[in-house]
Image (cartoon, rainbow, N blue to C red; front, side, top):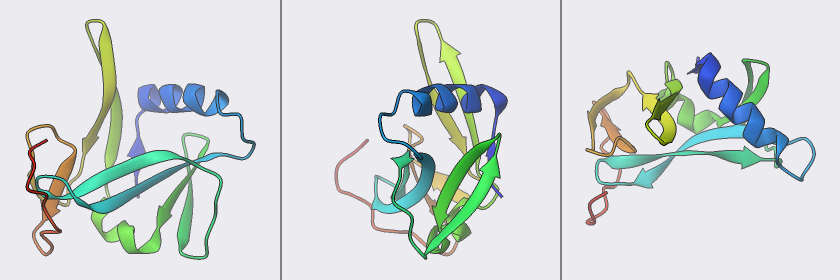
Length: 119
């Protein structure tokens, strides 16, 4: 299960409303790379595959590839405002190590493929 805070959901819904393509949904995933081994991927999509798992979270369609579920189960997405800026934050209970910028991680059973370059 993935959890999206009310504040993050408000931001995501506003961003979805700006999309010019109908039937867009939020896709959350994991890609190899980043300084810790895996990087988070979050964006809007309208391309569905048979490898996807669909969830309804905060009245939004959220899609995750089946193979990524093991890395994202229990994931918490929030939105924090800080002065004149703001951004999404991710708390992943599966991560045993994260990088300084918080955008990459590794788990106890999988180190991924870290990049040579820092965040």
